[in-house]
Length: 307
Image 1 (cartoon, rainbow, N blue to C red):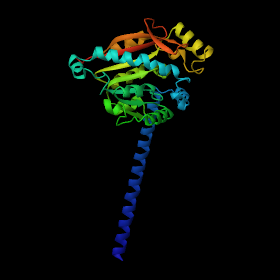
Image 2 (image 1 turned 120 degrees about the vertical axis):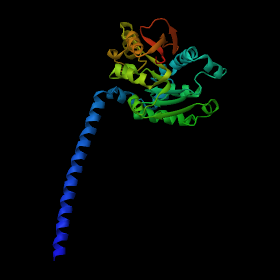
Image 3 (image 1 turned 60 degrees about the vertical axis):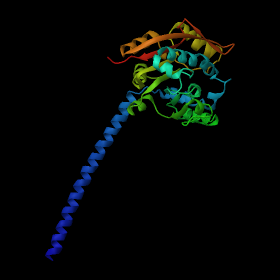
Image 4 (image 1 turned 90 degrees about the vertical axis):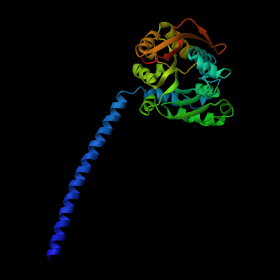
């Protein structure tokens, strides 16, 4: 009987301890849940992602790869933006690197991230030239389209028919620049083409791009200037009159002045090597380099060595 009473008291004590432990664990779980919720809310508050823009571009679907469709100007832009990048990299790399490359393309074996890659129009071209390219986009639909097209072309993380010969590879991920920063990723070249004019927080986006650039790496941006001319040609003419792109594609208030971009980059230790104007001829579907920066422009910056 005494053993039974002791056993009963032991069970009661154990039950009490278990109850207190459950309360403590429950309290910790609630606190952890609150912290996680607060962190997610904070990330949303400081995000560059504009949900409306993501939905708009995610709806393009397989039309990304219709060279005669609404993205045909982007396809033809490759004929200007890729050689410009190659030219600037050739001017930037050291003599030792140049001797190593010699007859090879300057892009070969470089690590490149294409931030806001869309359907992969630029990423595929860079990979084809031998770079190890990671394309990222906030729209899951865009990544699916890009992966499908790369697979169809025989391109992927292990290279493709052309990429394997030249050492290139191509990978896509449905993540943001902020996600890569959290992973502590850096790249030889960070590309952000026709994206800045669609983000919710320009300065934050540029800061994130700079953080992804490896030491002595480069940042390459193409975007639209905020001028009367860009409103007239980029929105009124291109969207409403000529219907070159769907109405509502651009918001003039989000356009980016090159002087503002330059100031932010130089203050962070980047050397803006060149800014090139670009003019589009809708009759020939060709882009031309021009000295005028009032509408479209390409900017190349190099990360200077830390003192």
